[in-house]
Length: 598
Image 1 (tube, rainbow, N blue to C red):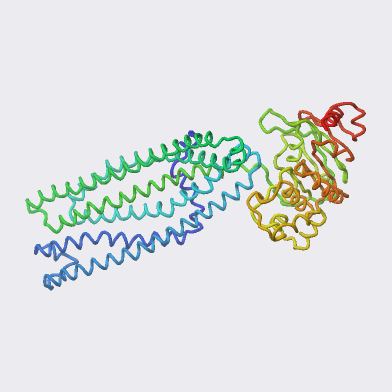
Image 2: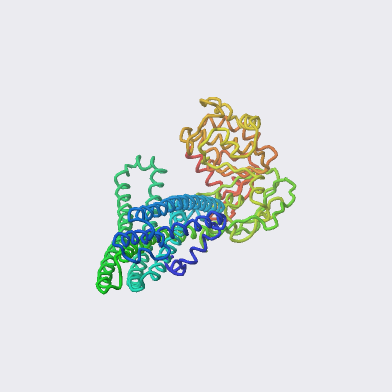
């Protein structure tokens, strides 16, 4: 990862944000335009104060162009005129700085929202394989704090840096026009301090990347412990897990301390240099005044210029820190955005015609989650339209992997899968999943009401929802809930039992009226009474549909049309319940073993 990051220059990273900046180019340009009058006003203020000093000392330079009008005014009138001009520049700066600050923050928030939207869209389009190897906590960090830091590149960083550079350039040019010796002194002092700032910023960048990596680990551990709080408490792991959390938290604090050190080093360096610059101006200016080559008004102007010249540099350094943190975030977010979308819809976007018969065919399908570690090997079978087929085998035989391939959560490593004679890779994913419904062992419940957990965002009417619930005998459960179909369900359905969540999954499948139904241990979470209630619904649901049933309790699949027996990813037996018992193979052994246990 480090080698990849070193190849990414800051400019290349900034260009990654260019498309988002172009969406808000008008606001960006307007905020840059507002920088010009603010910088000019900031440059004029020291000159006005210097003129006031010259006027008090009655120095001839007080009446130089364009301040010749002061010659015709009394001392009090002249000072009042200069004070009025100074007040005008202050008002100008307040108005333009406030307007520019609002515009820049507005643009930053818009860009942050756009990046977050694109990142979320990309993450939800990635194959399940990606989530197998990526902790959820790390993804949450990328989608939240990293994106926020990335938005800072625009909201307080890039535009502010342009303003600071323009202000420094305006002050430098003005200084050379007034007195070149003192101007040269101040400009020469910028060179070493700039080199020092660049060094500190590079170190800050490295420390900030490590800090964000530790923050990802911290969030990942936090998410894992909250999700598994039941296991944590049941096995009394609170103290042990707290110690692990403290260790990660300590590493995070240590890396944050490093970023604070380098950030503070920049501020301390600039503070010291600005004081040296003022002292240098006083020393050289005093010597020039002694030689009558400089007056007190110009010296006062340059003392203020010395401060004003380093103020933008100080602000530049602070904003550069925000930019460096943003570039760190760009690197981390780009790692996600660069993750290839493994499973895509066909390029032509056409939906091949379907007979809606529901035939499934696996042709020499092999699959490996990791290279050369095949969990399925040369599977070759056909499930006829309307046929009910059960998948049986020991744990790890590859039963669930077949379902994941059929629904295109993963792509086959070798071979192909046909649905009604069409390769499922030639079907849009939405169309493929519209033709089938899968009921898993653990039905996931979203925060929301019962009705929305059945429709899952699709436009089904309430009558259709109620009809689906009645067909699957779920209506009895729903009517027992406090507000019926409008009952609010908490995240992951924590206010429902496992069996109740599973019943809602059956209603989800029924409302979509699929041609293919897949049951992956779908009744495992149901008690005996609830299972009996839903068996009647299942019989109706399976009518005239192709069905694939995975069940460890072999007594529940005796009446299916065919049973496919798997072992270590290979199909070793196929036939009806009676045929396989007579065969005396693996299925017969598993069945007799379960009968003995019961």
